[in-house]
Image (cartoon, rainbow, N blue to C red; front, side, top):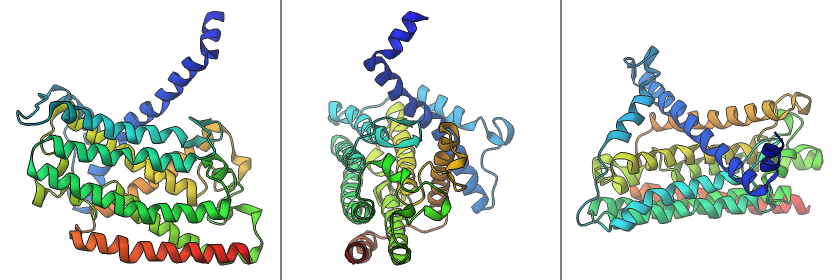
Length: 347
């Protein structure tokens, strides 16, 4: 027992153990969300979806994983083999590294750094490099088109997304994501207006602009994870499958896992910035690390559901419409909100 205690007190060992917590969460979450997405899509389209394996098809996600594990890992002859193999791992690492600063509860955050939200934006940008690498290394014109679309789309929608984050940072005066959450503690009435830090007049003036920034970030996050109606990089009717056309087996599975992990990541950021993070809607008296983790995950899963719901409801945009929404709608509105918030804070 003493040896185990000494081992757990070793900072390197603890860092490794803490690093495994998000990967376990991602694997479980991906299974649940994969099943949930198929069922939600089925109900929207008035069909049954998974029904054969297990009760109501609950074992189907495990069957899908088993199938991917057994599939042959094919690398095209003309592909750049090193970059082709590296790309899916780089995409996943960019997403996984961002989980380090997510405050899952009042008692658990991988790295409680003061520049947490800035680190998250920077680390998640690695995904663009991986997608470009996959398209170029595949030596396939459809993959290349898909990766170029993905880079243009993600870079374009990062602008209004980061501007929305900037508006929140201006109000809170911090980039620490745990501090952002704590400032919204005290119940649902403190979400969006960040507790008792402001006079009533300031709160009433801030609410409409914070709500607009929430909508801007939600739309930008949907575009960053390539979900319908912003799934131009994977447009099956135009590009076969886009940047991952040539991928199979576990490499394809890693792309898939990274997409679902990224979906929860952006949903978690929405929750932290605008909806109290791990705080309970009933106030801090309902606290505790396990209870706060429950609220954080449930709120995140709600916005994952919103993304799934919109995916199976809305049609795909054209490329010109995609860029129009980013540069001529979301970005001007985000800039206007930042100016208005600055004026309110000064006055």
